[in-house]
Image (cartoon, rainbow over all chains, first blue to last red; front, side, top):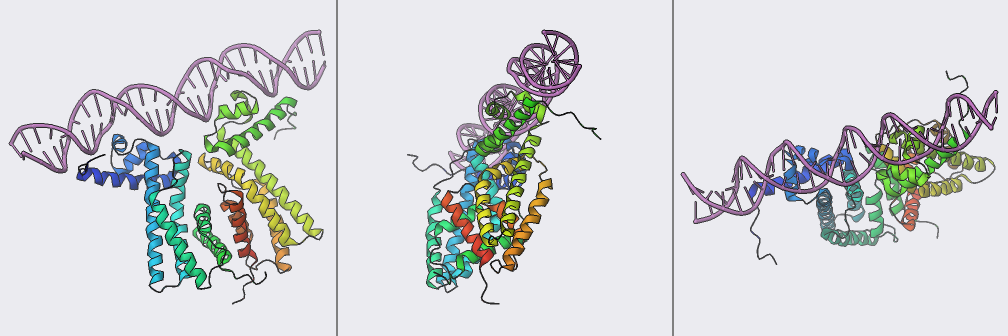
Length: 190
Length: 190
DNA sequence: AACTAAGGTGAACCATGGTTCATCTACTAT
DNA sequence: ATAGTAGATGAACCATGGTTCACCTTAGTT
């Protein structure tokens, strides 16, 4: 279709990035109420520029989500790589989940905004990558005998989705430790 | 102060109730976006009536939250009563939490709406009651040796706050079972 | 250095939805 | 029954905030 679309102008690319960052920040802070004007201001740009890069608010938020998903997938793959290099799977999983819970504080707001705007956030490209890596990590943990055999990727989804966001750090840590004991506890009774 | 304010008219009380119900339903369904007009329609009333009963949307939502908190406190006390009558504390706690997680699907939306509107939801009267009962239940469970010694009411708050809402029933059940194993698992190592 | 289109600007537009208020209705008390 | 007031009505008002667009700026090119 587009026979090699010519590359975007240098400042355009820069602005696009600034807009995404600003959007993430504003939404994390003010939720779906973050206004386009505010996002523009935070990015040091005029509103019109937002609309040159994204057709509407929904698309903008979707793009932010996509970026998050991508970053998450990267982290997952990095963890898997460390495991293959000899690291213990549970430890990596635990550390990974810790980071996820921290990031969730921002990402949840973003996802909520996406939902509030009726955005279609399903089936982002990077998601597949993350799932594959997660599956590998879980299998490794189970093979090493540290993870319950009934643990699945679904559980990870559940954790992503339900990670508490408006709780103080120590509460978030407690929450994760409760969950982890559910994933790792070795059942003694049948 | 108010020297026996004369009782409200019969239909006024009825309407107030219908409004609260409608508000809960609409907000559960559409989140903070539920409009006053829609709530009014659902209650079979005109908008003006909402404003006779509640000064603004924020207060209305706050009232709905208060109602939820009250119901929750009632349930807690009922559970405690059953324990005192001989029921096993963990079982009651587990059942109670199951109900909470089910109710959360509605209440979370309401609370989210409250937050979105900047309502002050802290320190509702009934909250104290619930806390007292919960403490008693936890102590009982620990005395019976089924609950970890480090479990506190804070954990219950955490559960209320982080119960997943946009997950299918089986996922919510799984979630609770993960959490419960964190509350009840008997640590073997020091 | 001049050209030109990609990119940026921001005042203005408009839909949405919370809120008001002048007016009408119907409970309750006498 | 009737008065009198608490309560109900809903069209209209207005603030908010997403979106548009006619017009400048400037990066990249020759």
